Image (tube, rainbow, N blue to C red):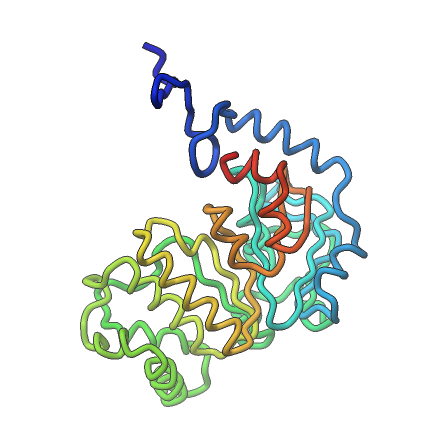
Amino acid sequence: MDQNKITQGGKDVRSGYGLGPVETVLSVDEVERQAAKLAAEGPSREHLGDLVGKKPLLSIERLRAGYGKMVVLHEFDLRVGAGQSLCLIGPNGAGKSTILHSIYGFTTITGGAVKMQGNDITRLSPNEKLKRAGIAYILQDTSVFPDMTVEENMFMGGFLMDRPSQAREAAERVLAKYPRLAERRNQKAGVLSGGERRLLEISRALIMEPELLLVDEPSIGLEPRYIDMVFEILHDLQHSDGKTIVMVEQNAKKGLEFADIGYVLVSGQLAMADKGSELLQNPEVGRLFLGG
């Protein structure tokens, strides 16, 4: 029996690259090959500016970056305004997380610039990005300290503050916003559910009161009910607290439903950029990344 063949009611149906059944399954290599065609004429800087509609809070200009001698991003541009959200989608290895790493200072940058409110922050260290530029990074992998209490984990978010009392005051303000965590403040973080751990990671990132949140795969490893909870929290941070969010999300449909702006990356280059709602309706994006 062909192990790649799936039938429903006698009809050959296959699971596709993304979500939902499709009649013709595309391999990852084929997705990348066809998506590369979309990157041949990427969006103009003018179009990226039009999507923001105002002076950008964060801008990336002609960025070349990677790890050591390996270049991942090639002449990459990005624009996002204050209080907006932007979601990066694309095949595995397209460079999505590398963009977040480059903004925060985790990569080798050989060209171009990262700017926050027009100020060049390309060469600032991650600590300086957090303390001086107002950028916080919420990692893809679980980053809580399991043997510390929820409260102690929160205090760690203020490690760059001048005095411990400042971190404690900031932690109390954030805990007041999230009673679910406040009720568990004396419990070890290791006993929290996956959704509660993600909430703790987000909450800890708020201690330094950042303007910009870099969020790497917020839904990864979570049950559906917790995925919805996390996106509700991010929605509240954007629309109630005015945070700007740049996100990488494996669930392309969920990410584009959430975000004001969507970027499609292919092989370290920007292939498409549009409103999230427009990309959801784009047949090429649907075929390659949304499962049909």
